Image (cartoon, rainbow, N blue to C red):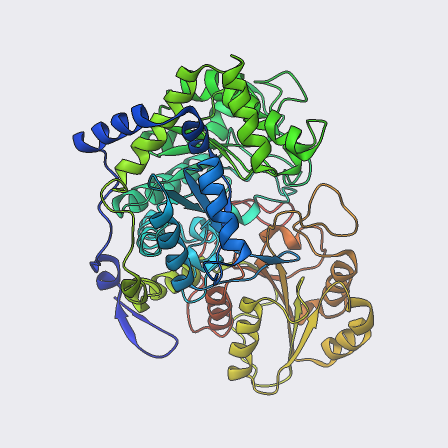
Length: 596
Protein backbone atom coordinates (compact mmCIF):
# COMPACT_ATOMS: atom_id res chain seq x y z
CA UNK A 1 0.00 0.00 0.00
CA UNK A 2 1.27 3.47 -0.85
CA UNK A 3 0.23 6.86 0.49
CA UNK A 4 0.28 9.82 -1.87
CA UNK A 5 0.99 13.25 -0.45
CA UNK A 6 -0.85 16.28 -1.79
CA UNK A 7 2.36 17.17 -3.64
CA UNK A 8 2.15 13.88 -5.52
CA UNK A 9 4.97 12.12 -3.71
CA UNK A 10 4.36 8.47 -2.91
CA UNK A 11 5.11 7.17 0.58
CA UNK A 12 4.89 3.44 1.23
CA UNK A 13 2.76 3.23 4.38
CA UNK A 14 4.77 0.34 5.84
CA UNK A 15 7.93 2.40 5.51
CA UNK A 16 6.27 5.35 7.24
CA UNK A 17 5.31 3.28 10.25
CA UNK A 18 8.63 1.52 10.67
CA UNK A 19 11.17 4.17 9.75
CA UNK A 20 13.82 4.62 12.43
CA UNK A 21 15.03 7.92 13.82
CA UNK A 22 17.58 9.08 16.33
CA UNK A 23 15.34 9.30 19.38
CA UNK A 24 15.77 9.41 23.13
CA UNK A 25 16.01 6.11 24.98
CA UNK A 26 12.76 4.61 26.25
CA UNK A 27 11.55 5.82 29.63
CA UNK A 28 13.28 3.57 32.15
CA UNK A 29 14.79 3.90 35.61
CA UNK A 30 17.97 1.93 36.14
CA UNK A 31 20.01 1.35 39.30
CA UNK A 32 22.24 4.37 38.66
CA UNK A 33 19.21 6.57 38.24
CA UNK A 34 17.72 5.30 41.49
CA UNK A 35 20.95 6.07 43.34
CA UNK A 36 21.16 9.55 41.82
CA UNK A 37 17.59 10.35 42.87
CA UNK A 38 18.15 9.16 46.44
CA UNK A 39 21.50 10.95 46.74
CA UNK A 40 20.12 14.19 45.30
CA UNK A 41 17.18 14.15 47.70
CA UNK A 42 19.60 13.91 50.66
CA UNK A 43 21.50 16.97 49.45
CA UNK A 44 18.48 19.21 49.05
CA UNK A 45 17.41 21.85 51.51
CA UNK A 46 13.74 22.13 52.47
CA UNK A 47 13.45 25.20 50.27
CA UNK A 48 14.82 23.30 47.27
CA UNK A 49 12.46 20.41 47.89
CA UNK A 50 9.43 22.70 47.98
CA UNK A 51 10.51 24.20 44.64
CA UNK A 52 10.51 20.77 43.02
CA UNK A 53 6.79 20.45 43.71
CA UNK A 54 5.77 23.56 41.74
CA UNK A 55 5.81 24.08 37.97
CA UNK A 56 5.13 27.56 36.52
CA UNK A 57 4.92 28.57 32.85
CA UNK A 58 7.84 29.44 30.59
CA UNK A 59 6.59 31.05 27.39
CA UNK A 60 8.54 30.36 24.23
CA UNK A 61 9.84 33.35 22.31
CA UNK A 62 13.16 34.88 21.46
CA UNK A 63 14.56 36.37 24.66
CA UNK A 64 17.77 38.26 25.14
CA UNK A 65 19.50 36.84 28.22
CA UNK A 66 19.22 40.24 29.89
CA UNK A 67 15.58 40.84 28.96
CA UNK A 68 13.02 41.22 31.77
CA UNK A 69 11.19 38.03 30.73
CA UNK A 70 14.32 35.89 30.81
CA UNK A 71 15.50 37.42 34.07
CA UNK A 72 12.11 36.56 35.58
CA UNK A 73 12.60 32.89 34.67
CA UNK A 74 16.07 33.00 36.22
CA UNK A 75 14.60 34.52 39.34
CA UNK A 76 11.98 31.77 39.57
CA UNK A 77 14.74 29.17 39.45
CA UNK A 78 16.97 30.87 42.01
CA UNK A 79 14.41 32.26 44.43
CA UNK A 80 11.85 29.46 44.32
CA UNK A 81 14.11 26.58 43.21
CA UNK A 82 11.50 25.36 40.73
CA UNK A 83 12.19 21.88 39.45
CA UNK A 84 10.85 22.53 35.99
CA UNK A 85 8.63 24.58 33.73
CA UNK A 86 5.55 24.04 31.63
CA UNK A 87 6.33 25.46 28.21
CA UNK A 88 3.70 27.29 26.20
CA UNK A 89 3.34 30.39 24.03
CA UNK A 90 1.63 33.72 24.36
CA UNK A 91 -2.02 34.14 23.39
CA UNK A 92 -4.06 36.83 21.71
CA UNK A 93 -7.59 36.45 22.99
CA UNK A 94 -8.15 32.73 22.60
CA UNK A 95 -5.64 32.27 19.78
CA UNK A 96 -2.21 30.79 20.45
CA UNK A 97 0.65 32.83 19.01
CA UNK A 98 2.89 30.03 17.80
CA UNK A 99 6.64 30.23 18.25
CA UNK A 100 9.50 28.29 16.68
CA UNK A 101 11.09 24.91 17.57
CA UNK A 102 14.59 26.42 17.57
CA UNK A 103 13.49 29.10 20.04
CA UNK A 104 12.04 26.37 22.27
CA UNK A 105 15.28 24.38 22.20
CA UNK A 106 17.33 27.50 22.92
CA UNK A 107 15.10 28.34 25.88
CA UNK A 108 15.20 24.88 27.47
CA UNK A 109 18.96 24.63 26.98
CA UNK A 110 19.56 28.06 28.43
CA UNK A 111 17.52 27.39 31.54
CA UNK A 112 19.04 23.93 32.00
CA UNK A 113 22.53 25.40 31.93
CA UNK A 114 21.68 27.84 34.71
CA UNK A 115 19.78 25.45 37.00
CA UNK A 116 21.46 23.77 39.97
CA UNK A 117 19.46 20.59 39.39
CA UNK A 118 18.19 19.29 36.03
CA UNK A 119 14.86 20.80 35.05
CA UNK A 120 11.83 18.83 33.91
CA UNK A 121 10.07 20.54 31.00
CA UNK A 122 6.42 19.72 30.36
CA UNK A 123 3.93 20.82 27.72
CA UNK A 124 0.33 20.47 26.64
CA UNK A 125 1.07 18.92 23.24
CA UNK A 126 -2.28 17.15 22.81
CA UNK A 127 -2.06 17.34 19.02
CA UNK A 128 1.71 17.33 18.90
CA UNK A 129 4.10 20.27 18.95
CA UNK A 130 2.22 22.04 16.16
CA UNK A 131 -0.35 23.15 18.74
CA UNK A 132 2.20 25.72 19.84
CA UNK A 133 5.14 25.64 17.44
CA UNK A 134 5.42 26.28 13.71
CA UNK A 135 6.83 23.65 11.39
CA UNK A 136 6.12 20.64 13.59
CA UNK A 137 3.96 17.66 12.70
CA UNK A 138 0.34 18.78 12.97
CA UNK A 139 -1.97 15.98 14.05
CA UNK A 140 -5.76 16.09 14.15
CA UNK A 141 -7.53 16.06 17.51
CA UNK A 142 -7.88 12.85 19.52
CA UNK A 143 -11.44 12.17 18.34
CA UNK A 144 -10.15 11.90 14.77
CA UNK A 145 -8.08 8.95 15.94
CA UNK A 146 -11.22 7.46 17.43
CA UNK A 147 -12.95 7.86 14.06
CA UNK A 148 -10.00 6.27 12.25
CA UNK A 149 -10.27 3.41 14.78
CA UNK A 150 -6.64 2.34 14.50
CA UNK A 151 -4.58 2.01 17.69
CA UNK A 152 -1.46 1.85 15.54
CA UNK A 153 -2.01 5.46 14.55
CA UNK A 154 -2.44 6.45 18.21
CA UNK A 155 0.87 4.76 18.92
CA UNK A 156 2.45 6.78 16.12
CA UNK A 157 1.04 9.96 17.62
CA UNK A 158 2.84 9.10 20.84
CA UNK A 159 6.09 8.21 19.13
CA UNK A 160 6.28 11.23 16.84
CA UNK A 161 5.25 13.69 19.55
CA UNK A 162 7.88 12.19 21.84
CA UNK A 163 10.66 12.42 19.28
CA UNK A 164 9.87 16.00 18.38
CA UNK A 165 9.41 17.00 22.04
CA UNK A 166 12.68 15.48 23.17
CA UNK A 167 14.44 17.23 20.28
CA UNK A 168 13.48 20.63 21.74
CA UNK A 169 14.18 19.65 25.36
CA UNK A 170 10.66 18.78 26.55
CA UNK A 171 10.45 15.44 28.38
CA UNK A 172 6.87 15.34 29.69
CA UNK A 173 3.57 15.67 27.85
CA UNK A 174 0.28 16.36 29.63
CA UNK A 175 -1.50 13.81 27.46
CA UNK A 176 -3.36 11.50 26.70
CA UNK A 177 -6.91 12.57 27.53
CA UNK A 178 -8.71 9.58 29.06
CA UNK A 179 -12.06 11.33 29.45
CA UNK A 180 -15.01 9.49 27.90
CA UNK A 181 -16.96 12.21 26.11
CA UNK A 182 -20.48 10.93 26.68
CA UNK A 183 -22.09 14.36 27.09
CA UNK A 184 -22.77 16.25 23.83
CA UNK A 185 -23.02 19.49 25.84
CA UNK A 186 -19.46 19.18 27.15
CA UNK A 187 -17.83 22.53 26.30
CA UNK A 188 -14.18 21.73 27.02
CA UNK A 189 -13.44 18.03 26.34
CA UNK A 190 -15.35 17.27 23.13
CA UNK A 191 -12.84 16.38 20.35
CA UNK A 192 -9.98 16.24 22.86
CA UNK A 193 -11.42 12.84 23.82
CA UNK A 194 -10.95 9.73 21.68
CA UNK A 195 -14.70 9.07 21.94
CA UNK A 196 -17.55 7.82 24.09
CA UNK A 197 -16.75 4.10 24.20
CA UNK A 198 -14.70 3.45 27.37
CA UNK A 199 -12.96 0.40 25.91
CA UNK A 200 -11.94 2.20 22.73
CA UNK A 201 -10.74 5.22 24.69
CA UNK A 202 -8.71 2.91 26.93
CA UNK A 203 -7.16 1.16 23.94
CA UNK A 204 -6.20 4.47 22.29
CA UNK A 205 -4.80 5.82 25.55
CA UNK A 206 -2.71 2.68 26.09
CA UNK A 207 -1.37 2.77 22.53
CA UNK A 208 -0.37 6.42 22.86
CA UNK A 209 1.43 5.71 26.13
CA UNK A 210 3.36 2.83 24.55
CA UNK A 211 4.44 4.95 21.60
CA UNK A 212 5.46 7.95 23.70
CA UNK A 213 7.29 6.08 26.46
CA UNK A 214 9.08 3.95 23.88
CA UNK A 215 10.52 7.13 22.38
CA UNK A 216 11.55 8.63 25.70
CA UNK A 217 8.56 10.76 26.69
CA UNK A 218 6.84 10.90 30.06
CA UNK A 219 3.06 10.69 29.78
CA UNK A 220 0.09 12.03 31.74
CA UNK A 221 -3.41 10.64 31.70
CA UNK A 222 -6.13 13.20 32.42
CA UNK A 223 -8.55 14.46 33.79
CA UNK A 224 -9.09 12.05 36.70
CA UNK A 225 -11.62 10.76 37.64
CA UNK A 226 -13.27 11.77 34.35
CA UNK A 227 -14.29 15.12 32.86
CA UNK A 228 -16.27 13.70 29.93
CA UNK A 229 -19.78 13.75 31.35
CA UNK A 230 -19.85 17.40 32.40
CA UNK A 231 -21.39 20.52 30.88
CA UNK A 232 -19.05 23.17 32.28
CA UNK A 233 -15.59 24.45 31.34
CA UNK A 234 -13.49 24.07 34.51
CA UNK A 235 -11.24 26.90 33.34
CA UNK A 236 -14.20 29.16 34.10
CA UNK A 237 -16.10 27.63 36.99
CA UNK A 238 -16.60 24.41 38.91
CA UNK A 239 -17.89 21.49 36.86
CA UNK A 240 -19.85 18.62 38.35
CA UNK A 241 -19.74 14.93 37.41
CA UNK A 242 -22.91 13.32 38.71
CA UNK A 243 -22.02 9.71 37.93
CA UNK A 244 -22.78 7.04 40.50
CA UNK A 245 -20.00 4.75 41.72
CA UNK A 246 -21.28 1.98 39.46
CA UNK A 247 -21.27 4.31 36.48
CA UNK A 248 -17.75 5.56 37.31
CA UNK A 249 -16.46 2.00 37.51
CA UNK A 250 -18.05 0.93 34.25
CA UNK A 251 -17.39 4.06 32.19
CA UNK A 252 -15.18 6.90 33.47
CA UNK A 253 -12.53 4.83 35.23
CA UNK A 254 -12.09 2.23 32.49
CA UNK A 255 -9.53 4.24 30.44
CA UNK A 256 -7.66 5.28 33.59
CA UNK A 257 -7.28 1.65 34.62
CA UNK A 258 -6.00 0.89 31.13
CA UNK A 259 -3.51 3.74 31.36
CA UNK A 260 -2.20 2.56 34.71
CA UNK A 261 -1.81 -0.96 33.34
CA UNK A 262 0.07 0.51 30.36
CA UNK A 263 2.60 2.18 32.66
CA UNK A 264 1.51 5.80 32.47
CA UNK A 265 3.94 8.03 34.38
CA UNK A 266 1.52 10.51 35.89
CA UNK A 267 -2.16 11.17 36.48
CA UNK A 268 -3.62 14.69 36.34
CA UNK A 269 -6.49 15.43 38.71
CA UNK A 270 -9.44 17.47 37.47
CA UNK A 271 -10.94 20.52 39.15
CA UNK A 272 -14.44 18.99 39.17
CA UNK A 273 -16.75 17.86 41.93
CA UNK A 274 -17.72 14.19 42.06
CA UNK A 275 -20.45 13.80 44.73
CA UNK A 276 -20.39 10.00 44.62
CA UNK A 277 -16.77 10.10 45.87
CA UNK A 278 -16.41 13.47 47.60
CA UNK A 279 -19.61 14.67 49.33
CA UNK A 280 -18.30 18.19 50.02
CA UNK A 281 -19.68 20.28 47.10
CA UNK A 282 -16.92 22.86 47.58
CA UNK A 283 -14.06 20.38 47.42
CA UNK A 284 -12.97 19.63 43.85
CA UNK A 285 -11.31 16.31 43.08
CA UNK A 286 -7.90 17.99 42.90
CA UNK A 287 -7.96 18.79 46.63
CA UNK A 288 -9.91 15.74 47.77
CA UNK A 289 -8.10 12.95 49.59
CA UNK A 290 -11.12 10.75 48.84
CA UNK A 291 -10.37 11.09 45.14
CA UNK A 292 -6.57 11.32 45.09
CA UNK A 293 -5.47 9.06 47.92
CA UNK A 294 -8.33 6.64 48.48
CA UNK A 295 -9.58 6.15 44.93
CA UNK A 296 -6.53 6.69 42.74
CA UNK A 297 -3.71 5.49 44.96
CA UNK A 298 -5.35 2.90 47.18
CA UNK A 299 -8.19 1.44 45.11
CA UNK A 300 -6.64 1.75 41.65
CA UNK A 301 -3.11 1.16 42.92
CA UNK A 302 -1.42 4.02 41.07
CA UNK A 303 2.09 4.61 42.41
CA UNK A 304 3.38 7.18 39.95
CA UNK A 305 3.34 10.97 40.01
CA UNK A 306 0.03 12.66 40.78
CA UNK A 307 -0.29 16.21 39.48
CA UNK A 308 -3.05 18.79 39.69
CA UNK A 309 -4.58 20.50 36.72
CA UNK A 310 -3.50 24.16 36.50
CA UNK A 311 -4.05 26.01 39.77
CA UNK A 312 -5.00 29.22 37.96
CA UNK A 313 -8.24 27.71 36.62
CA UNK A 314 -11.45 29.33 37.76
CA UNK A 315 -12.93 26.08 39.05
CA UNK A 316 -10.33 26.03 41.84
CA UNK A 317 -9.49 29.69 42.40
CA UNK A 318 -13.17 30.43 43.16
CA UNK A 319 -13.17 27.91 46.00
CA UNK A 320 -10.86 30.03 48.16
CA UNK A 321 -11.21 33.58 49.43
CA UNK A 322 -8.41 36.09 49.76
CA UNK A 323 -5.69 37.68 47.69
CA UNK A 324 -4.10 35.82 44.74
CA UNK A 325 -1.18 34.89 47.00
CA UNK A 326 -3.48 33.55 49.71
CA UNK A 327 -5.54 31.61 47.18
CA UNK A 328 -2.46 30.03 45.58
CA UNK A 329 -1.12 29.12 49.03
CA UNK A 330 -4.35 27.43 50.07
CA UNK A 331 -4.64 25.57 46.76
CA UNK A 332 -1.10 24.23 46.92
CA UNK A 333 -1.28 23.14 50.55
CA UNK A 334 -4.62 21.39 50.21
CA UNK A 335 -3.54 19.72 46.96
CA UNK A 336 -0.45 18.20 48.61
CA UNK A 337 -2.48 17.21 51.65
CA UNK A 338 -4.95 15.42 49.36
CA UNK A 339 -2.12 13.32 47.92
CA UNK A 340 -0.89 15.22 44.87
CA UNK A 341 2.86 15.22 44.30
CA UNK A 342 3.10 18.33 42.13
CA UNK A 343 1.07 21.49 41.58
CA UNK A 344 1.26 23.30 38.26
CA UNK A 345 0.67 26.82 37.01
CA UNK A 346 -0.23 28.68 40.22
CA UNK A 347 -1.63 32.16 39.66
CA UNK A 348 0.84 33.43 42.27
CA UNK A 349 4.13 31.47 42.43
CA UNK A 350 5.31 33.26 45.55
CA UNK A 351 2.05 32.45 47.32
CA UNK A 352 2.15 28.75 46.40
CA UNK A 353 5.83 28.38 47.36
CA UNK A 354 5.60 30.15 50.70
CA UNK A 355 2.30 28.49 51.48
CA UNK A 356 3.90 25.06 51.19
CA UNK A 357 7.05 26.15 53.00
CA UNK A 358 5.06 27.55 55.92
CA UNK A 359 2.91 24.42 56.02
CA UNK A 360 5.98 22.24 56.55
CA UNK A 361 7.51 24.60 59.08
CA UNK A 362 4.33 24.71 61.18
CA UNK A 363 3.74 20.97 60.93
CA UNK A 364 0.64 21.05 58.71
CA UNK A 365 2.55 18.93 56.19
CA UNK A 366 5.39 16.65 57.30
CA UNK A 367 8.79 16.75 55.66
CA UNK A 368 8.45 13.00 55.11
CA UNK A 369 5.41 13.69 52.96
CA UNK A 370 7.39 16.25 50.95
CA UNK A 371 10.30 13.82 50.54
CA UNK A 372 7.98 11.15 49.11
CA UNK A 373 6.84 13.47 46.34
CA UNK A 374 10.26 14.96 45.61
CA UNK A 375 11.75 11.48 45.27
CA UNK A 376 9.09 10.62 42.69
CA UNK A 377 9.97 13.74 40.70
CA UNK A 378 13.70 13.03 40.83
CA UNK A 379 13.12 9.43 39.76
CA UNK A 380 11.12 10.67 36.78
CA UNK A 381 13.97 13.00 35.83
CA UNK A 382 16.41 10.11 36.01
CA UNK A 383 14.08 7.86 33.99
CA UNK A 384 14.49 10.19 30.99
CA UNK A 385 18.23 10.60 31.48
CA UNK A 386 18.33 14.15 32.81
CA UNK A 387 20.92 13.27 35.45
CA UNK A 388 23.28 12.26 32.62
CA UNK A 389 22.55 14.88 29.98
CA UNK A 390 20.14 17.78 30.33
CA UNK A 391 20.91 19.58 27.04
CA UNK A 392 19.70 19.00 23.47
CA UNK A 393 21.56 19.37 20.19
CA UNK A 394 20.24 22.55 18.61
CA UNK A 395 21.52 21.47 15.20
CA UNK A 396 19.43 18.29 15.36
CA UNK A 397 16.13 20.14 15.76
CA UNK A 398 15.81 20.77 12.03
CA UNK A 399 16.34 17.07 11.38
CA UNK A 400 13.86 15.79 13.96
CA UNK A 401 10.94 18.23 13.90
CA UNK A 402 8.45 18.16 11.04
CA UNK A 403 9.91 15.19 9.15
CA UNK A 404 8.01 14.66 5.85
CA UNK A 405 7.27 11.02 6.66
CA UNK A 406 5.74 12.04 10.00
CA UNK A 407 3.63 14.73 8.37
CA UNK A 408 2.40 12.06 5.95
CA UNK A 409 1.27 9.92 8.89
CA UNK A 410 -0.67 12.87 10.32
CA UNK A 411 -2.32 13.29 6.93
CA UNK A 412 -3.24 9.61 6.96
CA UNK A 413 -5.04 10.10 10.26
CA UNK A 414 -6.98 13.06 8.90
CA UNK A 415 -7.89 11.15 5.72
CA UNK A 416 -9.12 8.10 7.60
CA UNK A 417 -11.10 10.16 10.11
CA UNK A 418 -13.47 11.79 7.59
CA UNK A 419 -16.89 10.30 8.32
CA UNK A 420 -19.94 10.48 6.10
CA UNK A 421 -22.67 10.47 8.72
CA UNK A 422 -25.54 10.83 6.25
CA UNK A 423 -26.08 11.60 2.58
CA UNK A 424 -29.82 11.50 2.03
CA UNK A 425 -29.55 13.81 -0.95
CA UNK A 426 -26.69 11.88 -2.59
CA UNK A 427 -24.50 14.95 -2.92
CA UNK A 428 -21.19 13.19 -2.33
CA UNK A 429 -18.99 12.98 -4.27
CA UNK A 430 -19.47 16.45 -5.73
CA UNK A 431 -19.56 16.34 -9.53
CA UNK A 432 -20.16 19.99 -10.29
CA UNK A 433 -17.41 22.10 -11.83
CA UNK A 434 -19.01 25.46 -11.11
CA UNK A 435 -21.59 27.25 -9.02
CA UNK A 436 -20.29 26.07 -5.64
CA UNK A 437 -20.76 28.28 -2.59
CA UNK A 438 -18.81 27.59 0.60
CA UNK A 439 -19.84 29.25 3.86
CA UNK A 440 -17.19 28.95 6.56
CA UNK A 441 -18.44 29.57 10.09
CA UNK A 442 -15.59 30.34 12.47
CA UNK A 443 -14.53 32.30 15.55
CA UNK A 444 -11.88 33.99 13.44
CA UNK A 445 -12.59 36.65 10.82
CA UNK A 446 -10.88 34.65 8.07
CA UNK A 447 -11.23 31.22 9.61
CA UNK A 448 -8.51 29.06 11.12
CA UNK A 449 -5.48 27.89 9.18
CA UNK A 450 -7.33 24.64 8.58
CA UNK A 451 -10.43 26.39 7.25
CA UNK A 452 -8.33 28.54 4.93
CA UNK A 453 -6.57 25.38 3.76
CA UNK A 454 -9.94 23.88 2.85
CA UNK A 455 -10.90 27.04 0.95
CA UNK A 456 -7.68 26.92 -1.08
CA UNK A 457 -8.21 23.23 -1.82
CA UNK A 458 -11.77 23.94 -2.95
CA UNK A 459 -10.69 26.76 -5.27
CA UNK A 460 -8.09 24.51 -6.86
CA UNK A 461 -10.90 22.16 -7.84
CA UNK A 462 -13.63 24.75 -8.52
CA UNK A 463 -11.90 28.04 -9.45
CA UNK A 464 -15.15 30.02 -9.61
CA UNK A 465 -16.39 28.88 -6.20
CA UNK A 466 -17.63 31.63 -3.87
CA UNK A 467 -16.32 31.53 -0.30
CA UNK A 468 -17.92 33.42 2.58
CA UNK A 469 -16.32 33.68 6.03
CA UNK A 470 -18.87 34.17 8.80
CA UNK A 471 -17.99 35.02 12.40
CA UNK A 472 -19.86 36.47 15.36
CA UNK A 473 -19.08 40.04 14.32
CA UNK A 474 -20.30 39.91 10.72
CA UNK A 475 -23.00 37.23 10.58
CA UNK A 476 -25.81 39.77 10.71
CA UNK A 477 -24.29 41.86 7.92
CA UNK A 478 -23.56 39.06 5.45
CA UNK A 479 -26.62 36.87 6.06
CA UNK A 480 -28.65 38.24 3.13
CA UNK A 481 -25.74 37.90 0.69
CA UNK A 482 -24.99 34.37 1.90
CA UNK A 483 -28.60 33.23 1.56
CA UNK A 484 -28.93 34.80 -1.89
CA UNK A 485 -25.76 33.07 -3.08
CA UNK A 486 -26.87 29.76 -1.58
CA UNK A 487 -30.24 30.02 -3.34
CA UNK A 488 -28.53 30.34 -6.75
CA UNK A 489 -25.74 27.81 -6.12
CA UNK A 490 -25.51 24.36 -7.66
CA UNK A 491 -24.03 23.10 -4.38
CA UNK A 492 -23.51 24.63 -0.94
CA UNK A 493 -20.83 23.58 1.53
CA UNK A 494 -21.49 24.86 5.05
CA UNK A 495 -18.32 24.32 7.03
CA UNK A 496 -19.00 24.80 10.75
CA UNK A 497 -15.72 25.27 12.58
CA UNK A 498 -15.95 24.90 16.36
CA UNK A 499 -13.32 23.35 18.60
CA UNK A 500 -12.94 23.18 22.38
CA UNK A 501 -10.89 26.04 23.81
CA UNK A 502 -10.28 27.13 27.36
CA UNK A 503 -12.59 29.91 28.55
CA UNK A 504 -14.46 30.08 25.24
CA UNK A 505 -18.00 31.35 25.58
CA UNK A 506 -20.75 32.32 23.15
CA UNK A 507 -23.81 34.51 23.69
CA UNK A 508 -22.75 35.45 27.20
CA UNK A 509 -22.63 31.89 28.53
CA UNK A 510 -20.65 31.56 31.75
CA UNK A 511 -20.00 27.81 31.70
CA UNK A 512 -18.14 27.60 28.39
CA UNK A 513 -19.17 26.66 24.87
CA UNK A 514 -18.01 24.69 21.88
CA UNK A 515 -20.93 25.69 19.66
CA UNK A 516 -21.53 28.41 17.13
CA UNK A 517 -22.54 31.90 18.17
CA UNK A 518 -26.34 32.29 18.11
CA UNK A 519 -26.44 34.48 15.00
CA UNK A 520 -24.11 32.13 13.11
CA UNK A 521 -26.16 29.11 14.20
CA UNK A 522 -29.33 30.81 12.97
CA UNK A 523 -27.72 31.51 9.60
CA UNK A 524 -26.63 27.88 9.30
CA UNK A 525 -30.19 26.75 10.06
CA UNK A 526 -31.52 29.17 7.42
CA UNK A 527 -29.16 27.81 4.79
CA UNK A 528 -30.28 24.26 5.53
CA UNK A 529 -33.94 25.31 5.46
CA UNK A 530 -33.69 27.23 2.18
CA UNK A 531 -31.16 25.08 0.30
CA UNK A 532 -31.03 21.83 2.24
CA UNK A 533 -31.40 19.56 -0.80
CA UNK A 534 -28.10 20.87 -2.19
CA UNK A 535 -26.28 21.63 1.06
CA UNK A 536 -23.46 19.63 2.61
CA UNK A 537 -22.88 20.45 6.29
CA UNK A 538 -19.33 19.69 7.38
CA UNK A 539 -18.64 19.65 11.11
CA UNK A 540 -15.06 20.88 11.07
CA UNK A 541 -14.24 20.01 14.66
CA UNK A 542 -17.13 19.62 17.09
CA UNK A 543 -19.18 16.74 15.62
CA UNK A 544 -22.28 17.71 17.60
CA UNK A 545 -22.63 21.02 15.75
CA UNK A 546 -25.44 19.67 13.56
CA UNK A 547 -27.50 18.36 16.46
CA UNK A 548 -30.57 20.57 16.75
CA UNK A 549 -30.37 21.83 13.15
CA UNK A 550 -33.37 20.23 11.43
CA UNK A 551 -33.26 19.15 7.81
CA UNK A 552 -29.58 18.29 7.37
CA UNK A 553 -29.48 15.67 4.62
CA UNK A 554 -25.75 15.41 4.03
CA UNK A 555 -23.54 15.56 7.10
CA UNK A 556 -19.78 15.01 7.29
CA UNK A 557 -17.49 15.08 10.32
CA UNK A 558 -13.72 15.63 10.39
CA UNK A 559 -13.42 15.88 14.21
CA UNK A 560 -10.63 18.44 13.86
CA UNK A 561 -9.86 21.75 12.17
CA UNK A 562 -6.12 21.40 11.50
CA UNK A 563 -4.82 22.00 7.95
CA UNK A 564 -4.57 18.26 7.30
CA UNK A 565 -8.29 17.98 8.00
CA UNK A 566 -8.97 20.74 5.47
CA UNK A 567 -7.01 18.82 2.86
CA UNK A 568 -8.84 15.60 3.69
CA UNK A 569 -12.29 17.17 3.61
CA UNK A 570 -11.75 18.65 0.15
CA UNK A 571 -10.38 15.37 -1.21
CA UNK A 572 -13.26 13.40 0.32
CA UNK A 573 -15.92 15.75 -1.04
CA UNK A 574 -14.69 15.21 -4.58
CA UNK A 575 -14.32 11.46 -4.26
CA UNK A 576 -10.51 11.44 -4.29
CA UNK A 577 -10.30 9.49 -1.03
CA UNK A 578 -12.90 7.21 0.54
CA UNK A 579 -14.75 8.29 3.66
CA UNK A 580 -13.83 5.43 5.98
CA UNK A 581 -14.32 7.03 9.39
CA UNK A 582 -16.75 5.66 11.94
CA UNK A 583 -18.54 7.83 14.47
CA UNK A 584 -16.72 7.42 17.82
CA UNK A 585 -19.62 9.18 19.54
CA UNK A 586 -23.41 9.26 19.17
CA UNK A 587 -25.14 12.25 17.62
CA UNK A 588 -28.60 12.55 19.25
CA UNK A 589 -31.29 12.60 16.62
CA UNK A 590 -28.78 12.07 13.79
CA UNK A 591 -26.77 8.86 14.12
CA UNK A 592 -25.50 6.27 16.55
CA UNK A 593 -21.88 5.57 17.46
CA UNK A 594 -20.23 3.33 14.88
CA UNK A 595 -22.05 4.84 11.89
CA UNK A 596 -19.92 4.80 8.76
